[in-house]
Amino acid sequence: MLFTTVPGSEINLIRSLANNTIEWSGRFGKGWVLATSGDETETRYLSGKGKSWHTHPSGDSRFSLEDWILFLLDSADSHVLATAENIRTYRKRSVENINIFSQQRIGLNPKVSWKLNVARFGKYLCRSQDLDDPYGFLEDVLCKNLGIIVGQD
Ligand SMILES: [Zn+2]
Image (cartoon, rainbow, N blue to C red):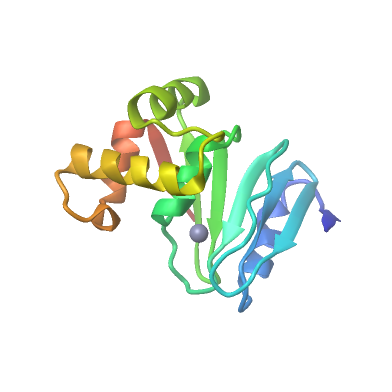
């Protein structure tokens, strides 16, 4: 569904959707928020114009490994992750550099299966952070390596 908002209050609307038992996701821009609902643990990722966003009803205010892949494959320059308590913004320093890095160094590709992208990203995390289990990755190290700035408010 498409909401129109007073410009500048998009995050307030996203924050209100985060206070929920299901995940929400979508896109937003100045004066509008596009939203779709998922279930308790996941939601669809909408592509298109604007910035992207999603919520975590669990209260976890960090990207999951899967969230990272979606963000890296997406054309949006930033993503807002909202929980009932917290808003976290992930911003790409350079969309172009990240696209190149994601494709050439990590091997992410929207045309191959999701499973293969998860495997490739997991391999990259293990290699770059010296891990056995990719889910044990450190977010600040990943952000530094990729050129992503995390903001909070
Ligand atoms: Zn998520």
